[in-house]
Image 1: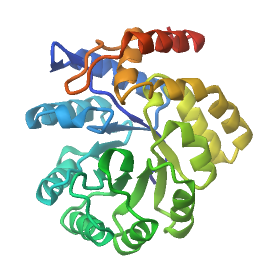
Image 2: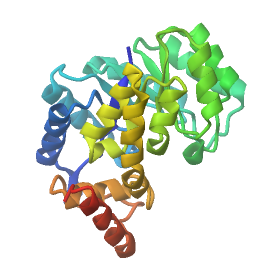
Image 3: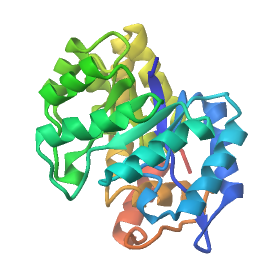
Image 4: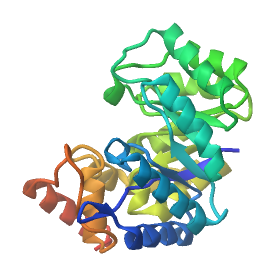
Length: 291
């Protein structure tokens, strides 16, 4: 079952090329620190800036390096049905475990359009699918009723990455879907509250820099140890906030650079962290003894 702490992995660059030495270091870091799964080609991975051949090589590299030790989720969604079906079908060929399909952005579909889109992707592929709802980026918010309808009618739609800030929606979806359907928190500030409402895990930005703590939080919730989960949740408040000083993944890539894990490099149209926020971030990382 989809559960636990999945890291929304950054894509490290060096001189505008994917830095495979740094990528290997990141993957080894997560396998050592207890991360339960890896998300590739997500928002945090700067998927819109990656060319097709870059994605292909990166995915193959990560699958080979992880070698079955952790499940892998791959972002395959676009606002084009044909491209989404092709990428989602192709994910299984790589040996990927889950496809993360975002709600179609820019088109601003109706709820019926969203239902038909996800149903078609489901029916034309053969891999477990996770719906990604992040209206702050897509300008479309999939309704609770649409999610429940898809979960009931599409057995390989197995989860929801919930990044709308709506605890009521997440609670209802967690309560009213089948047992093998997983709500996954997509907002680090709400990881513990969402799991207390029935989510089975997190897809985390903060896990890039503190994978052990985020994994412990998820494990504590899954065990029903909410006292320990609350302690970790409160401990992570400042670092969670720091990861969003500016548009994700600008701060987390700067943090990883300060940790010596990657180069501080990001692709346009995103730019490097401002000096004011860089100083704030540095102080936060020092307070956590990360640097």
